[in-house]
Length: 495
Image 1 (cartoon, rainbow, N blue to C red):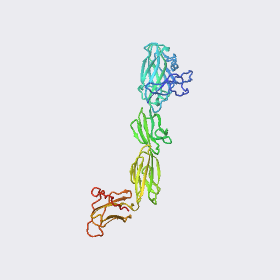
Image 2: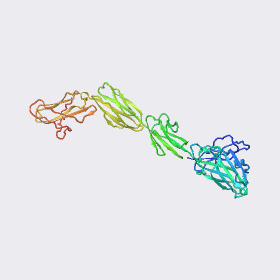
Image 3: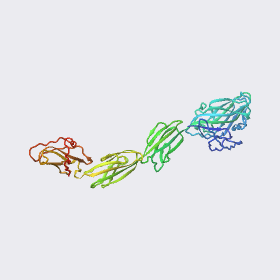
Image 4: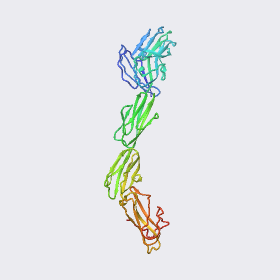
């Protein structure tokens, strides 16, 4: 950020009281006799630069026939003058009361000298005074041929010219910083009606910006780090920090439950709720923290049939963790969850099949339910457990129908009966016939703890009767084409 400070030579005497800073050009009216009373106005510089404070000169010194040197403190047609021939002369003006931020970089110095001469050949040479002594380049200007009351303004230096010096805020802010004016010694008289110094400098700044997506939290956002501790309104806003030293800064946002956070700097750096940025000379950086509000997930338990003797156990992973629901059913809600994916897993119970469903999105699953939580979502995940009874063991099965191709359907029968449906490792389905069967099909259902079972190992043993062969040809769909159901439907043998 470019800035300037300007000061007008308008006062006299050291040890005067310092005056407050203003935001327009500072003009100090004074009373001589070594007592100064100042009244400040301000001025804005070019380049759209932000102005800084300024004040008047406190000390005036002269050598070798400069007269009326105190008149150089204000432009009022009353001048300091020199008409001698000694080249070792000077008019020195110091103690401009600059107050430039110590973190700034000095870019340049401009001197506006109100001067005149009785002859146009008369010149004035100006140098900056640093730590009480002239230093750097000497810039010379020719005066307008005019008496004191008609002096003109000559500008020396530039906004990017340090006059051959390496200036710092500490040097410019000293009381012995100023200018020294040396007059040429040819015929005529030199006049100085006033001198203004304008110091251009650059500072660094960081603006922290808060952007919120979704519902605002209940309290403001808090930050810590290299910029100190500060807050930004809970609904969003900015906080500016100016006059910073060129350095590396880490800025950290205090986490709030239910909000994800990302950060990005206009200088290119990125982060999450903490970001480290490099602030270089002249930088004006903006660091944006973006928070997205999360939502809630309600987990609901529904039990069909008799309830188990112990509660239902779940684990929802990061953000939800382990929890339980009553054995007979119930629900619990997890609020302020960050957006993202969640896997909610129910611990299986023997003799209970599980089906899960999420509303309002409609996803379905088993004992594990995967859900995607977006900003503002309020999801309900329902786990429905059905008491399977005797068929609740892993890989248990029972018949649901049979079709037989009988030689003489009028006199012969075939039927299937479920037996031994306990939680044993071997289950039995009995087929009983009263005649010759050319072919038959048995339809059965397999049920596991978490729902239907799609594969199993089957064996067939022939018992009773005489002769014949028994074989099995694997699992397949109910053979509607090759073994159509009788008009009355297949034999329902469910027990």
